[in-house]
Image (cartoon, rainbow, N blue to C red; front, side, top):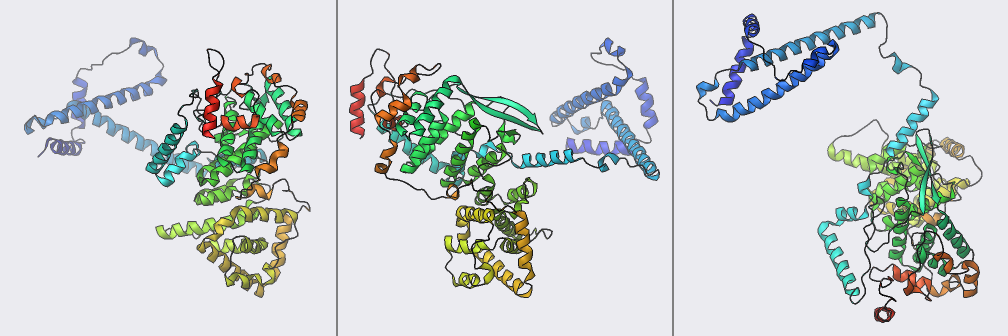
Length: 631
């Protein structure tokens, strides 16, 4: 028999004989001398209230001592004969006796509490009466806002698109892709003066490239107020930044892209100029350069954050009504679409949550695409939770996108439940939700058939019915939101399972209407009551902004936006105005007397630099020779 097993048997025998030898052990304990280590005499001056705490500390220390003693005893048990192991430790008996006494005291205390509860029930006194007190309207609003805040919390690890690409394709594929890019860039950098690399601060929204410049403090953020549990902030421009902003407005008024590019030569992180150039590059079909300009814009905006500004928790507000706050909404919305085009739907979902949390008024219409990103990222449980907890003026399922997306969400959750044999019969089925969506917004099905497209004869038969024959509802807001939904979500309906779900629900609706035609009027009343305005309340949201299609214009058609020298002189006055701005850097000498737009294109390439030489003039001949070879 091992030493550990022998010790266990002896302990069980000790517990059985404890009620017989209890009095003898108490006499033995009284006769033993009491020795305490490191007693502080000033502890005797403490109040009696601290005695339980001291006893607890002594008990914890004694447990630690016994644990260490038991470990030592177990480690040495293999070296001792079994006869020596049978000798019990008197200290362990004391501690076990203390444990039994503590357990008995706790049991007595529990019994007393039960008796007290019975007495209170007999007296008809509700102990938890405070929980049943009526909740004020203010507390209800606060609880709703807390729920909306919790459901919009952003997980920073999913904001990085590179991490999501690694999860999709694997680390080996991404490493090989990165190594091939590094090899190509190293071949292009041969014979070129190296660009200076800066130690840039880490950011959450984007990952700064090594060839980016440092961001100055000309853009900052100020704290406005705290209201209803939200912290309100606003971006602030410095005097030098404001002067660059006025120059941008002048160049924008005359459609001078060269003038805007010239601003970026002197102030590389001017937000509005970066947004304009990103749009310009996108029109030219230069998507990588457009995405790079948006990333620089977000990096500059994040560098200006206030120390109290923590948007990932959903408790900070940047109201769109402030002009200085508007660029971050445009940048985040464009960045979200860029992530979606790369296939990083989970990252796009997190950016959409951030965009929606910054302003409760939702000026960019993030609520009309967040369901799409949740479905593409397979976040079905989160989407249902969001629809239940997020606050909106109308019930969120009344919107066309959510009425259909929640049915799709329920369909996939049912598929997962079937695999796990864990069906939930309390919630409506996916077919019932799809039926409600078709009854509420029947015009969606005709637009989906044309957009997807759906060419099966089943859809032709469905569209012959009078209920699905029209693609207009007569309510401007609903028709506009349906156009946005079809443009944003039509790709999802190319899956055969969802087409089967939609066609089955449509046939059920047709059968229901044949037996009860009054439901058409009932659902029409619900739709009209939910969207009662005769005007298009969402006219500021462009359908093209929710589209995946990329429109490009030939370069020769953009010559009118390049600006002529005379107009540039009127709008910009003189290039030296930037050099004289306080706190602003001079333009590099290597770009003097050159086309500003061409210089901007070159500056975004990591192997091109315009740094001045410390020993005098820059080596322009070497630089021009390389650019000719590169071209």
